[in-house]
Image (cartoon, rainbow, N blue to C red; front, side, top):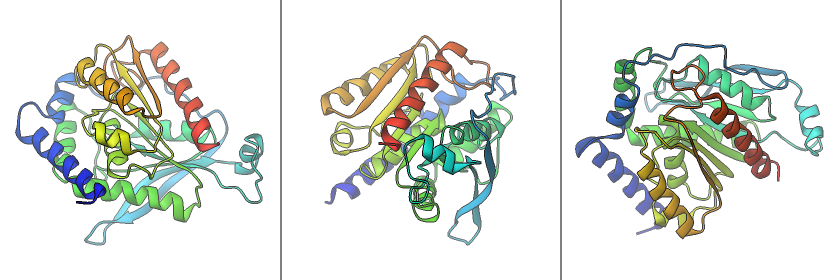
Length: 293
């Protein structure tokens, strides 16, 4: 059996087991976020340089319905490219596929997408919830589980976002990045296409798809952030992933913080500013290293 087909079967099996046997990823997320709402705070950061942003249709469903995401890019890409040592007459901005948390593609994710764009990237925030967002843990659980029950559609959505950045914006390098629910999907995107992305950043994502076989095969540098007191993605699961990562000789880094789940979400109740800023600094350095080689 071809390696790619085997990986997809492993992914499908992992999702199926998570939904039918024992406590699923959705269950753990719901327990960790129980009673929370994505209440906006003043902690969200504006981009470091001016950006433009708008909604874009980057693919369509099998029924022909447009799938709409949120795209942000530097307002003056030529100056960004020049500052990065690139020739604006021939170079193009790198791209980032941005995957939302379990709340959906809300204002917090749009803010984060603009912040990434301000660093010198064309950032495309996908929508895996078909236009819906959650304002309570109960509604987020429903949306997440509905999406997890359609793994093929979810993978096709992420693949389309990658292809859009490559073909429509001529991005020479493309990363994938997500938080919470999106962190787990970041890992799955790499597992489904181990040589496709030039970098991957996962914030407290479930790493079950990162098997030893996948980690040995992937050429994608991976940066992962975990909280030491996270119960949605347990420290044990994160440490097991770290062991596999080391054994496989994978490229990248895994960091642990004195924080719980969603510590980098400024609109949540678990926000830890010190950990969030350290993780952001590591993330921007990692993206620069791999997207502006």
